[in-house]
Length: 387
Image 1 (cartoon, helix red, strand yellow):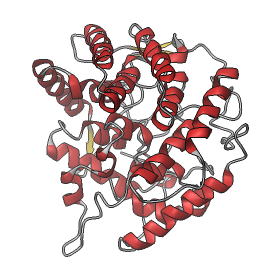
Image 2 (image 1 turned 45 degrees about the horizontal axis):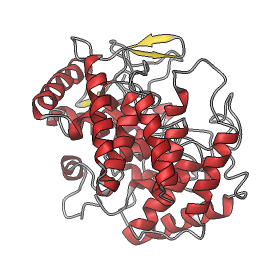
Image 3 (image 1 turned 180 degrees about the vertical axis):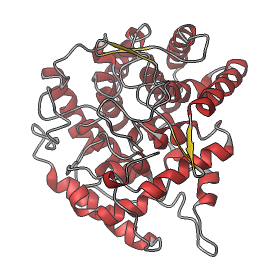
């Protein structure tokens, strides 16, 4: 069994309607504007997302920084205009984070402040993007340099996450110190790669060998590939494709992947996931450029059969949700740019009916970060077909 049908909603059969989707994207942005509780309280976090943490959440993963980034991306692409002063809010969010970091009260990888998704690095990156200054850049660079030896070995807390931040700043500023910082981190991460092509993650008092984007192989590869020298990049892609072929679970022309290098799909809670953070959706998103095409399409087909997961949430966040919705971290690893609105061509062709125009590239993915589940079921189902 590749997924448990009772845990998912079926997709609708309505045809893609770009005008209707555009209207609803603008509604989502308006809802997000209205949901802001002010520059001190920001947005209300879901109870699950603020587990053992402070409120409001300020980070990039499930907090205000992620919402601000998504609103800015939609504005830059011309899809929706927010009424909010994003620059002012980003700077206020940084002050709030520094006064009261919203990190779980459990043992975390150090230095925890350097985490891209849950630490100050992500908050700073968004603040610089919206209100650039030399001081913010200097603080961000210090976090990148401090994270070179982080033993987490994954995107959320570790060196791969700060690789993404360094590359973003290099592209935005053309300042050579970001290239130097990126290279130092990349060389360190490469040196810790196992002979079998996997990294060992040390997280929350556990040692894991994960495959998924936030905590494992494909996320690390996605962070390394853009600026890695061609010899190492070719080897990295070849070895990683072989690992994904070996670990794929196939059934009736569909594919899913376990969260770790093991033969069973279910997690510790017995659930089989089809998400970005665990399951085939994240593998497909992260490895689309080097995964063997037949396997890529088998993995991309699975979310069409599963549909979006049933979740009792009403988020305005960037949290653990369906990989079919292609949330923030994919956009980050694709580098916060045009790739956000440019899905994999093979997947677009595979999911377009005869005589139907492919929706691929029509709408950028940041809108999915603002999706409010209780009011957007049909839109979410339609957007899920983007994968």
